[in-house]
Image 1 (tube, rainbow over the protein chains, first blue to last red):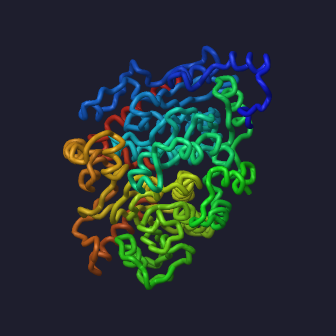
Image 2 (cartoon, each protein chain N blue to C red):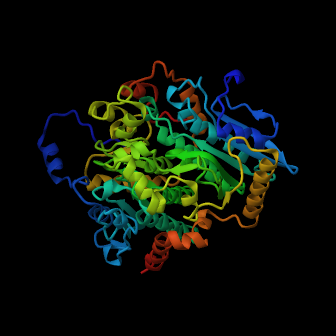
Image 3 (cartoon, each protein chain N blue to C red):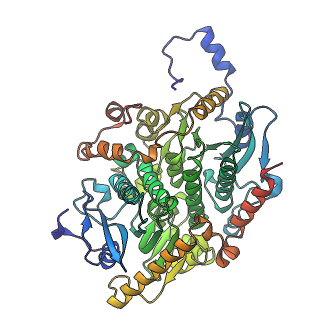
Length: 295
Length: 275
């Protein structure tokens, strides 16, 4: 499902399509949820007027936000029930605190309850996040573990779809979340990695990883690289209707026979063939782990 | 996997103590040790991460959770699930002493996030399949380490010891990311419980099933080992009586005080779920 590249010269058709595009990246999380859901169907849960704020940030001299940076919205996608859990990358780098992560874990749990009682609902996560919010550290991490537990239980009933749009990317404990999703959609502007570039540089030294080397970063963890090497299922352009279509066609595939994180034997075989003394680079990995080759 | 170069670590100490001479399962890695111990006639699977100076991935030589470590844990947890499909579900015990995940270029490229996801997935799958799953934290549980190896357990137990440290990120890196100094982080940890690095503060969050006191974590006596085993067996019995999911971490007196927001969010979401 690759709709980004087009080697044709600029034609009228291409220009018109570009002008009609509605950018996902330029939206805030709430607008994204509104744009994904069918018009008029958006209903936010625990919205800003419910004032569920982080109890911890004010103790550290940081101004909280009334939605704690996560939008939970119910509605319809293509006429079917859906719940969108959208992380706002512009608030604390999309870091998961006690409240924001609990909103996601709680919504996933309720979606599971619905699916188990014969009321299917499609869960979609918009993962725009640096990972655990370090200002809430252990509690953020504890609730991220609850998110993982909920996804692993829920995805048996219904595909759980993750989207990484960019520009923040998806890092830390939430990259594990992305790895647990049934299907993962990325934009070329997305990055997906457990370890943020700055942290790798801090922990392993600048010879191992120069966090200012943008080319290196994108060649390892950029959206296109992740898609081409099988860590994501769809690469789409920055356009709402492309995303809506992709979500619906992935949902129509149903629950995969084997989730990516269950593909233990295949990944062990693949890693066994890697020589860490002569490791591949980004383009090299695309040749040896091409997408669609998963057993 | 040569035993002559075995580096001691708390993970290894407790693995050996709890395995009690049980034959180790061959994991193909020097950094992951697995054994099926027999406790009171019952088979119990133990898994731990240990330092391996010969690890072929250089960034995973000090007890880090690297690419192969995550997938290998997943394999050995799933092996127990398949083997016990139609029989008694053996308890699975993750012995936690994890430096961190492995940080490096090759780890990024080859998807260490998925390797950790696979381990978390396997433990959660074992939990849902009816295996009692317990994590025993004996040393450091930093960064992604606990998310992959421990957090999906039914119950978390920890030794009450100064070197038992649970945190989302090592201090130096957390300081860099949050634009603070290490001293400022230490200061915050004194008053803000989730920011603390020591296990007694962590215990206040209601996430621990039990904090085991009076044990020498580096050189436990036979009596201390017996007591830890007994506490683990009690946790296993408790799980068999009342398995559930991770919600026991929310339904306890400590959580009611220090995780009031978590509880409130779930309550109000449920209220608003239907129109």
